Amino acid sequence: MVLELDWHSLQKEAQSCRKCRLCETRRTVVFGEGDPAARLMFIGEGPGKTEDETGRPFVGRAGELLTRIIENGMGLSRSQVYIANIVKCRPTVEQKGFRDRPPDPEETAACSPYLLRQIELIRPEVIVTLGNPSTRFLLNTSLGITKLRGQWADFRGTPVMPTYHPSYVLRNGGEKSPLRRDVWEDIQKVMQKLGLPLPS
Image (tube, rainbow, N blue to C red; front, side, top):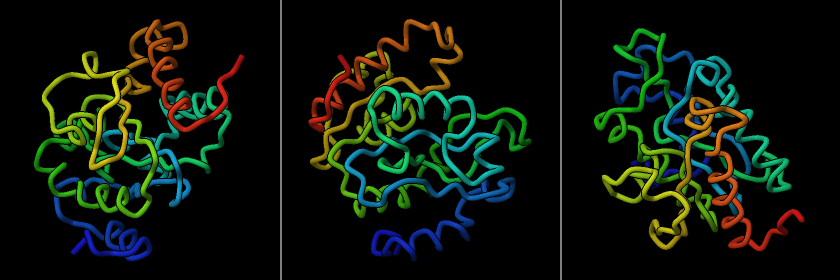
């Protein structure tokens, strides 16, 4: 069973997974990236086009924004945190590979055991969920991110901070979006929880 595998075996199992239809159109399985013993874990919904091509999570435009939050805002490097998604293969509209979409319930059910085992093995002190799909999945709720963001929640004893997905910020004003301020407020709460120094 996936939930009994060690890190190496889990990654190997995910790389060859054919449990849902996303395997039919993927180029690469995007397992995750970062420190397997990280104090902080970021969880999004699924790989996009650039991620599917490179095998790395959050490396497109949204990934660049997340990297700036981690490095410039938090004073950490990407290698010090762990970044993953609910599903490890890219979901696209009608499986045609052009437009990304959130994973559907069947895809989430098939792939989520990999994420759950990653969380068990990493044992992060804090999880940040990025956007609706990961927040609703971990918190088992139908509420939207606008109602949940900025408020501490719990996943099996681990504090969870929901915030907006970087791609949502980019779609709604980009670098000048007021949503960036909301995300930064949420991230500051995470830094306080982890005992990280806040910028002056």
